[in-house]
Length: 211
Image (cartoon, rainbow, N blue to C red; front, side, top):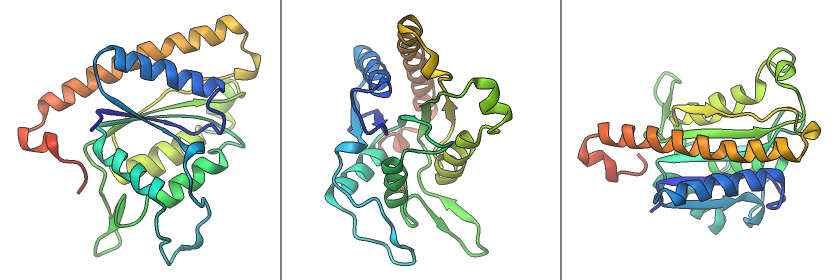
């Protein structure tokens, strides 16, 4: 069982996103905390929902394992690029196939959703070419809303820390190195928050995974 799950949504593990994930994971493990890693591009699954949610497709073994890792984690950090103001296609398919009704959420009488992944926090590290002012004013933080709120918080994963990295296409080597070094800062913050939250939980709840 791992305390922190690192999920890479970029199709190239050797990308800048991959380097950010590697630096973050190394910092966590350097502090003596266990981690698990999911590189979505290495998973073998069909990303297409052929019948929508009217008929749930059987999960491939890699998706079953992915759900287990999410259940076991107390914190999940996601790394991916923003493409066309959204998730990369394979990562979007991963979310569609994995965050299923009955596992991530379920509707109660009256149509209100019940969150099933409570007890976990998240950080979202998204890279983009857009400058920060345009992401905030032009795109109205749409990716933060759709994934951070509409997916993670909707399923009970909270709090969700947003750590966008802007203007990647204009970064020189020094700027990229500063962004990589920032992963150590994020790792420390996440470890402090995780420790504080875990200590505040009753002892019986610290060994639970999913509902």
